[in-house]
Length: 183
Image 1: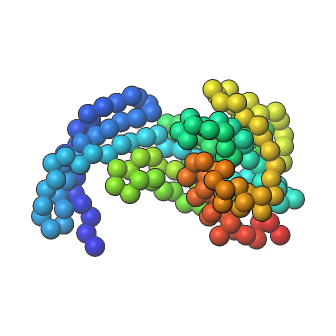
Image 2: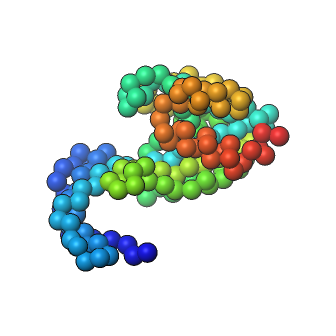
Protein backbone atom coordinates (compact mmCIF):
# COMPACT_ATOMS: atom_id res chain seq x y z
CA UNK A 1 0.00 0.00 0.00
CA UNK A 2 1.34 3.43 -0.90
CA UNK A 3 1.47 6.47 1.35
CA UNK A 4 0.23 9.97 0.68
CA UNK A 5 2.76 12.58 -0.38
CA UNK A 6 2.78 15.99 1.26
CA UNK A 7 3.13 18.59 -1.49
CA UNK A 8 3.03 21.64 0.77
CA UNK A 9 2.22 22.62 4.32
CA UNK A 10 1.06 25.97 5.69
CA UNK A 11 0.59 26.85 9.35
CA UNK A 12 -2.87 28.41 9.75
CA UNK A 13 -2.97 28.69 13.55
CA UNK A 14 -0.44 28.36 16.34
CA UNK A 15 -0.43 28.64 20.11
CA UNK A 16 3.18 27.63 20.74
CA UNK A 17 4.27 25.35 22.26
CA UNK A 18 0.92 23.63 22.77
CA UNK A 19 -0.88 23.59 19.43
CA UNK A 20 -0.40 24.04 15.70
CA UNK A 21 -2.97 23.65 12.94
CA UNK A 22 -1.56 23.13 9.47
CA UNK A 23 -3.16 22.92 6.05
CA UNK A 24 -1.50 20.46 3.73
CA UNK A 25 -1.80 19.78 0.04
CA UNK A 26 -1.45 16.02 -0.37
CA UNK A 27 -1.18 13.71 -3.35
CA UNK A 28 -3.01 10.40 -3.02
CA UNK A 29 -1.64 7.17 -4.52
CA UNK A 30 -4.30 7.29 -7.29
CA UNK A 31 -3.07 10.73 -8.42
CA UNK A 32 -5.81 12.86 -6.87
CA UNK A 33 -4.66 15.98 -5.02
CA UNK A 34 -6.34 17.36 -1.91
CA UNK A 35 -5.46 21.01 -1.42
CA UNK A 36 -6.88 21.45 2.08
CA UNK A 37 -6.15 18.52 4.35
CA UNK A 38 -5.90 19.84 7.92
CA UNK A 39 -3.81 18.42 10.73
CA UNK A 40 -3.74 19.35 14.39
CA UNK A 41 -0.30 18.99 15.94
CA UNK A 42 -0.27 18.83 19.71
CA UNK A 43 2.73 18.32 21.99
CA UNK A 44 4.25 14.90 22.41
CA UNK A 45 3.57 13.23 25.76
CA UNK A 46 4.67 10.22 27.79
CA UNK A 47 2.43 8.13 30.05
CA UNK A 48 3.49 5.45 32.47
CA UNK A 49 1.58 2.66 34.24
CA UNK A 50 3.56 2.16 37.48
CA UNK A 51 3.36 -1.17 39.33
CA UNK A 52 4.79 -1.85 42.80
CA UNK A 53 6.58 -5.09 43.73
CA UNK A 54 3.35 -6.09 45.52
CA UNK A 55 1.38 -5.81 42.26
CA UNK A 56 -0.46 -2.60 43.14
CA UNK A 57 -0.81 0.13 40.52
CA UNK A 58 0.14 3.73 41.31
CA UNK A 59 -2.65 5.98 40.05
CA UNK A 60 -3.71 9.59 40.33
CA UNK A 61 -7.19 10.88 41.05
CA UNK A 62 -7.51 14.33 39.52
CA UNK A 63 -9.68 16.75 37.62
CA UNK A 64 -8.98 16.82 33.87
CA UNK A 65 -10.43 19.71 31.92
CA UNK A 66 -10.83 17.71 28.68
CA UNK A 67 -13.55 15.42 30.08
CA UNK A 68 -14.52 18.10 32.63
CA UNK A 69 -14.50 15.80 35.65
CA UNK A 70 -12.41 14.03 38.25
CA UNK A 71 -11.18 10.65 37.13
CA UNK A 72 -8.45 8.09 37.51
CA UNK A 73 -5.29 8.56 35.49
CA UNK A 74 -1.69 7.48 35.29
CA UNK A 75 1.35 9.75 35.59
CA UNK A 76 1.79 11.55 32.28
CA UNK A 77 2.93 14.79 30.79
CA UNK A 78 4.63 16.57 27.95
CA UNK A 79 8.00 15.42 26.69
CA UNK A 80 10.24 18.47 26.73
CA UNK A 81 12.12 19.56 23.59
CA UNK A 82 15.21 17.38 23.20
CA UNK A 83 14.13 15.02 26.00
CA UNK A 84 13.97 11.27 25.40
CA UNK A 85 10.42 9.95 25.98
CA UNK A 86 11.65 7.44 28.61
CA UNK A 87 13.28 10.31 30.54
CA UNK A 88 10.03 12.27 30.32
CA UNK A 89 8.06 9.29 31.62
CA UNK A 90 10.48 8.86 34.54
CA UNK A 91 10.36 12.59 35.33
CA UNK A 92 6.56 12.68 35.30
CA UNK A 93 6.31 9.57 37.49
CA UNK A 94 8.60 11.09 40.12
CA UNK A 95 7.08 14.60 39.96
CA UNK A 96 3.44 13.51 40.09
CA UNK A 97 3.65 10.57 42.50
CA UNK A 98 7.04 10.57 44.24
CA UNK A 99 7.66 7.01 42.98
CA UNK A 100 10.75 5.70 41.22
CA UNK A 101 11.08 2.38 39.35
CA UNK A 102 13.41 -0.54 38.70
CA UNK A 103 12.41 -1.27 35.09
CA UNK A 104 10.81 0.90 32.42
CA UNK A 105 9.27 -1.07 29.57
CA UNK A 106 8.21 0.71 26.36
CA UNK A 107 4.70 -0.22 25.19
CA UNK A 108 4.82 1.73 21.94
CA UNK A 109 4.36 5.14 20.37
CA UNK A 110 1.02 6.14 18.87
CA UNK A 111 -0.88 9.15 17.56
CA UNK A 112 -4.39 9.68 18.88
CA UNK A 113 -6.16 10.54 15.63
CA UNK A 114 -5.81 8.46 12.50
CA UNK A 115 -6.18 11.35 10.06
CA UNK A 116 -5.77 14.68 11.83
CA UNK A 117 -2.85 13.39 13.94
CA UNK A 118 -3.47 15.09 17.30
CA UNK A 119 -0.60 14.19 19.59
CA UNK A 120 2.04 11.51 19.67
CA UNK A 121 2.13 9.51 22.87
CA UNK A 122 4.82 7.25 24.27
CA UNK A 123 3.36 4.56 26.52
CA UNK A 124 5.40 2.82 29.25
CA UNK A 125 5.06 0.22 31.98
CA UNK A 126 7.21 0.77 35.08
CA UNK A 127 7.82 -2.17 37.41
CA UNK A 128 9.38 -2.34 40.84
CA UNK A 129 7.97 1.07 41.74
CA UNK A 130 8.72 2.38 45.22
CA UNK A 131 7.89 5.68 46.90
CA UNK A 132 11.05 7.79 47.35
CA UNK A 133 9.84 11.37 47.93
CA UNK A 134 6.81 13.59 48.18
CA UNK A 135 5.13 14.39 44.87
CA UNK A 136 6.10 17.79 43.45
CA UNK A 137 4.06 18.26 40.30
CA UNK A 138 3.95 22.07 40.43
CA UNK A 139 1.14 21.95 37.90
CA UNK A 140 -2.23 23.64 37.94
CA UNK A 141 -3.70 20.28 38.89
CA UNK A 142 -4.67 18.94 42.28
CA UNK A 143 -3.74 15.26 42.53
CA UNK A 144 -4.31 12.46 44.97
CA UNK A 145 -1.95 9.50 44.55
CA UNK A 146 -3.65 6.15 45.19
CA UNK A 147 -2.51 2.55 45.02
CA UNK A 148 -5.07 0.30 43.35
CA UNK A 149 -5.41 -3.40 42.69
CA UNK A 150 -5.54 -4.38 39.01
CA UNK A 151 -9.11 -5.68 39.33
CA UNK A 152 -10.22 -2.31 40.75
CA UNK A 153 -8.74 -0.57 37.69
CA UNK A 154 -10.44 -3.07 35.36
CA UNK A 155 -13.76 -2.19 37.01
CA UNK A 156 -13.00 1.54 36.91
CA UNK A 157 -12.25 1.32 33.19
CA UNK A 158 -15.50 -0.59 32.54
CA UNK A 159 -17.42 2.06 34.50
CA UNK A 160 -15.82 4.97 32.62
CA UNK A 161 -13.84 6.30 35.58
CA UNK A 162 -10.71 6.45 33.43
CA UNK A 163 -11.88 9.52 31.54
CA UNK A 164 -9.03 9.96 29.04
CA UNK A 165 -8.40 7.54 26.20
CA UNK A 166 -4.62 7.65 26.73
CA UNK A 167 -5.15 6.12 30.19
CA UNK A 168 -7.58 3.52 28.86
CA UNK A 169 -5.15 2.52 26.10
CA UNK A 170 -2.16 2.29 28.46
CA UNK A 171 -4.09 0.16 30.94
CA UNK A 172 -5.46 -2.05 28.16
CA UNK A 173 -1.95 -2.67 26.82
CA UNK A 174 -0.60 -3.55 30.26
CA UNK A 175 -3.49 -5.92 31.00
CA UNK A 176 -3.24 -7.55 27.58
CA UNK A 177 0.52 -7.74 27.05
CA UNK A 178 1.98 -7.78 30.57
CA UNK A 179 -0.46 -9.63 32.87
CA UNK A 180 2.58 -11.42 34.35
CA UNK A 181 3.62 -8.31 36.33
CA UNK A 182 0.68 -8.92 38.68
CA UNK A 183 1.84 -12.41 39.75
